[in-house]
Image 1 (cartoon, helix red, strand yellow):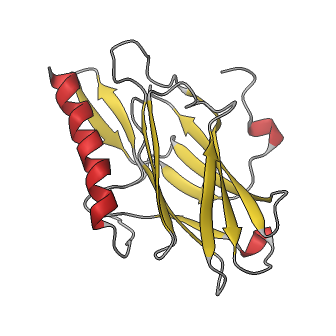
Image 2 (image 1 turned 120 degrees about the vertical axis):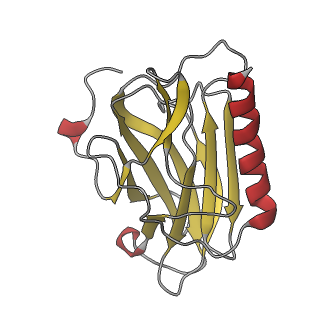
Length: 192
């Protein structure tokens, strides 16, 4: 019953954000994990003024949920969210994968939950690309002009890993370190 309550609460929290999205703000209330990381790298994509943003994840504990609210800007250029691809990503098998974009505020919230049915495991500890998403700018810009930041989106969506606290048998939140940068080949896992 507790698992169902947690899942329903997470789904309602993400659904509520669609109606309540406003200006995001960063949070410093919880210290970031030294071991868990979300890194976003930006690459030119084939479409005109289009960019692919790869979201890479390093996690030391199994992750059952991963809300990922991001603000994506490029100076005076306006960026529009196009699509998301989970192909070859670590969260591709997750049962709940939703994207809620807000072009006015230049934000996108990815809601990711591994298991809704009791049949899927959490994302195993490891490292690698979780997913990619695409944005198109309304004017010509370079990939280095795109700035990505983790934000808090109302009512309470923040970048976090939901992991099981084995001692107390409850889901807890771990705040990963957020980085915009380049994923180095030597950082990629041998296998996941």
